[in-house]
Each structure stands twice: as structure tokens, then as C-alpha cells.
Length: 173
Image (cartoon, rainbow, N blue to C red; front, side):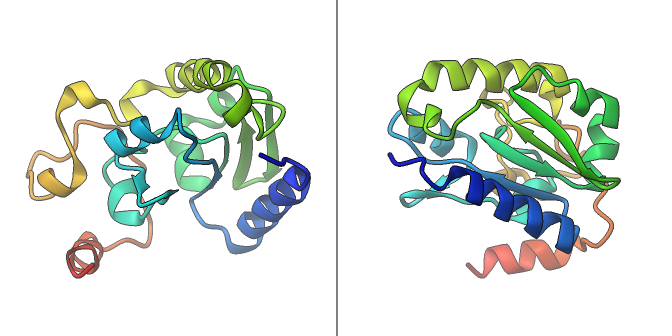
């Protein structure tokens, strides 16, 4: 794995999300070690990681190596809680956007998976496990979307989402 362009990738992520004001963005990779976990939490499909709105209305599958949290997630977790996360880097990009990075280099995903997982778990514990997918709860967005009691997770109140439209689009895939 070549991490030569890591800083440019991070700059691109930061720039995209401060300009578009979306609620969540990420950088991660489906490494050989992580892929089975990503399949289990619903983040992996094919040979890549992907995340769509119809999953986010139920839970975050996991915490990626780098994440940009918009205002909905800042409200959910709390600004100070995010800013005090026990990870390599956390910084405010603007009043509505916070950037988080688990470790110093994206190559850590390939070269030191255990350390990345330790950081990931520490950060999820700090932010609140109740926002992240947990296999033992037996809840998957695609099997439980009509559950009237809602997901057993804390999720943001998304300002522009009509769940019926999201589910209709998801069912047509």
C-alpha cells in the first residue's frame, strides 16, 4: 500500500465536506483484516466500503480511519465529546464540521490493523457505542426498517431526509 498521497486525500475530504455541508464523510479501506468485520456490520459490498443514507438513519456501521462529522453528528455526539476523542487527530474545520483521524497514517490500516482497531474501539467507546452497529443486538437496517419502535441505536435527526423516499430508493437497487 502506498500512502504517498495521504495528505492530498485528507485535504480533498476536508474540502469537500466544508464546501457541501453534508453530515458525514470518510476515508477507510477494505483491508484483508477489516473486510470480514465490514461485511458483518453492513459497510462492505463487493471489494469496497460504501455507506448510504438508508443505513445512516439506523446506525453508523463503524468508525472509519478518517471521518468528517457535520452538524447532525456534532449534535448527536456533542462537540466537546468529539473534540476530546482519544485518537490521533481531531480538529474543527468550521462551526459545523469536525475532522477525526484514528492514526497518523492511512497505511496503518494495512501495516498495523490491531492498533487501528484499538483506536477505533476507544473512540467508539468515548463517543457512545449506542450509535454504532453491534452484532449482538441482532438489528440490521435492511431487515428491520419497518420496525415501528425504531432502531435500538442513537441516530442524528437528519434535516432533509424523508425515510419513505430513502427506503423506496434502497429497494430499487
